[in-house]
Image (cartoon, rainbow, N blue to C red; front, side, top):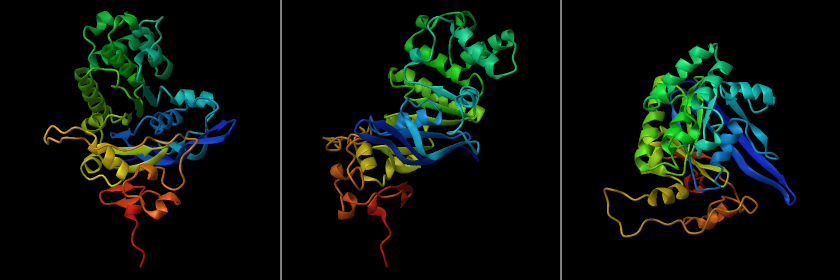
Amino acid sequence: MSNVLELRGLCVEFPTRRGTLKALNDVSFSIAAGEVVGVVGESGAGKSLTGAAIIGLLEPPGRISAGEVLFDGRRIDNLPDDQMRRIRGRQIGAIFQDPLTSLNPLYTIGRQIAETIVTHLPFTWSQARERAIELLESTGIPAARARIDHYPHQFSGGMRQRVVIALALAAEPRLIVADEPTTALDVSIQAQIIDLLKRLCREQGAAVMLITHDMGVIAETADRVVVMYAGRVAEIGRVRDVIHSPSHPYTSGLMGSIPSARHHVERLVQIDGSMPRLTAIPPGCAFNPRCPHTLPRCTVERPELRAAGATRAACWLHEEPRP
């Protein structure tokens, strides 16, 4: 399978009065057509910022200072705003955590979806309206033909999120960036949205970047997972390998903090301390102040991603011994 998205050494900086703050540092991974890649980590790890950099929605004064974002083999991080707007919506769809921020409260959902279709595809208004009804039906909106002229406030949270997914899929994009799409929903609705994303990915062959802090969602949905910490990639691999055989101490802590239905434990694993502020990332491995396996070089040298069993991890514990 060819890569729809490829990040190569992506760095994002924010100039401040106290100096330049590096929010993303050398982030690299790819997503193939028909693949769901989950991006996980604590709040502040850089997950949402990575998504914003990909779709060209970095908040000023943030900027991409190094690296490349390739979409279908073409570099897009250096495109002018008008060219990026044509790609965003047509070839790259976005689903955000709060559906109310994605929907205009003054327009019906049908008008918003049809407008997106007419803007990006060679459809007449009546054809776009019929396509909008089909999309709403495919995302599980009951009585879509009757509800297409309703406004966002007339839908529940779960239904609004389905509308946002329909909106993101309106122009049949090649890539979908889904930022915490199930966080504000109850568990039963979460499961339905997850099933919907998987089905649409399978049927349309779209690549999906799923940003979340919920490993349960990742386990149910993703093919591979990228674990981020303090603006860097800590580990990357197939979901089952990362969940059952994590190679980075941070990933081990994340996995150990998830309750198991199979095994009873008195106490879940706890990662001591908290993620460092981006203005105070320690030298060496950013995780070293919290790591139970710190080596002397962990405090002075930053590890790169390397083969670590079934995954790749940025950890000195997996360095090949020197002859």
